[in-house]
Structures are given as structure tokens and as C-alpha cells.
Image (cartoon, rainbow, N blue to C red; front, side, top):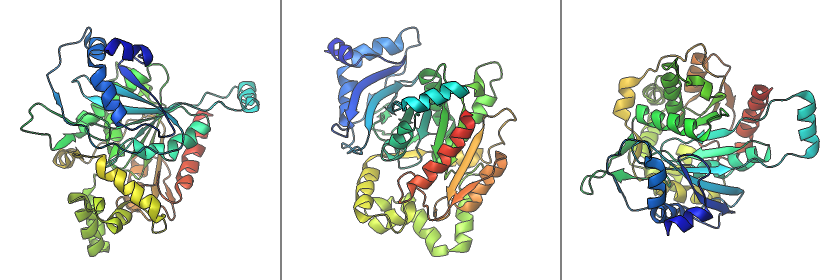
Length: 381
């Protein structure tokens, strides 16, 4: 019964239904869907109280189970959007710091570490952060969270009609609104640092613009910082494609076809070329390819909407601190795009050698994690 299930895994955040901890990957994301179906009556009462009645939506069949990474201890939640979508939310709590380090922080009056919220890009979902980044930063005292955006990973893929399934998950504005609502609900008193990757970083840029337009509300005070990893710049991805066409026509065509046809799902060499370095072990490459193949049933973002909105305006003067990093070997977001974003946010870009687009999974992922951690330590100070 719904009530018994909720007693076992109680509501721990307003608007979030906890589906229970996942220990060392011994469960699958299907457990989240079971939680959703078994607790529907209970969480509907929680999420609709005092709110306008939402439009009726029908949940599509759940995707095939994803095999979660084997490292770390994870908790899974569902964030329910205002229009009734359930978004997968994964948390790995901060490890307890050694007593000597805690004593030193108290003695010098160091500020506490902010929570981290990771936002994926196209054809990805929350799992990409669970492999390395969440365990790494949790071990360094950061409370870590990762969200799967609409219709990605373990999040709902819904339609108002069984006969007309959705073809794209959302727009820049709708994804930024989801991000805004999630941050307000999950982090009401402790502003997080939001870390965006690829198109997730463009969504984060749009969120900064939306929050800057609400001077009378909490606005950008909700953020402790923004970190952009291999992100699409304010001008969009059109200029990137144009540069690659001029530099290497065949590479540009292969990359474009890889995303349009999702050839990386079937073709191992395409998957490596788009996302990973040449020396990523084949066993890891095959495992990542299998996860990528099942985590994005529909396209993340409406590119026609993106093209209408770019270039995005620069961030306001009171925008939170920013961090911009990219990989020298990235075949999706080139160095010029990283430099463009850094210039707009008035920070020095960090471009790391021998690092591909999926830098959180790539062979030398630690380099990106070290650089981000160093910036976070400065931010905390």
C-alpha cells in the first residue's frame, strides 16, 4: 500500500519522494518507477495540496533498466514539477570529514562547503555523474546531487495522448524553469553550486537570465556559483558547427550525423569519436555506450527554439561566481566556444589537454575534477 511504502521511505524534502538508498548499484532505475506507481496516491496528496489542479498526463512505459555505477552510496528521489512531471534526482551525501580537518575549519572560521547540483547535456542523464564525480566530491565533503531532465534517464517521458508521443523533452525556457523550481525546493536555505555540461550548461545560462529578471524575488541569491564544463556557449552550437566545417569537413559531417542519427548507439567508433578519448579502455567504452543508448528516448531540447533565442545576453553584474572549463580534444564543443563563454562571464577559461567531451567519464576525468575542486575551495574561502 502507498501508506506503508511512504512509511518505509518517508518524504525528506517538500516536493520530493525518496525511493530509498541504492547501495553499490545493487538496484536499478526501475525501482524508481516502481516507487512512483506504488506511491501515486500518497505523493499526489502531498504535491497537489494547495496548488491548482494539474493537466492530466499519461506516463509512457519505463525504459529498460540502467545499470548504475558500482562505486558510492546513492539515494534516489523524484522531484515533481508544477505540471506533474517526475524528475529523477540522485544524491550522494558528503562523507564525514576527518576530525582534524573539521577542527581546522572551525578554528579558521572556514565557510561550509556548498552542495553541488550536476546537470547533464543531450543524450545523457544523471548516471554520468555517479561514475566518478559524485563519489569524488562526496569524499571531499560536498553534498552532491544530479538531476535527469525531462524525458531523460529515470525521469518521466509523458504525453497528453498515447497516439501522439512527445518528440522533444522541452525548450530552453521550460528546462530552465524546471531547474529553478528544483533549486528552490531542494535547496531552500543553502544555495548550491550548479554544474552544467554541454547543453545542460546552456540551460544553466538561461536559468541565470531568468533569475536576473526577478529582482524582487530570491533570484540569483539561490546560487552559490555556476560551473560550466564543456558547455555550449551563449551563441549556441551553430558557430561551433561552422568552425568544424572549415577545419575538417569529414569530421564535422561524422559528428553531425552522430547526433542526428544517434549513430553512437550502434557504432563504437562513433561513440568514442563524439564523447571519449582514444585511450579510454574498450570495456568502459562499451559500458558507457550501453548506458547512453537507453537514457535518452527523446531529444533533450528543441534546437529550433535554441536558434531563435541565441545569442543569449551576457549575465548581469550581480551574477554568481562562474567557472569555465573545456577539453582540448573535445570534438563537440571546441576551444573557441569555451573561450567565448569565459569571456562573457569575465573569467579565465581552463582548457585541459587530452580531455574529450564527456570529461566526467573520460580517461583523465580527475584533471577536470581537480580543477573544479580548486575553484570550489577558493569560492568557499
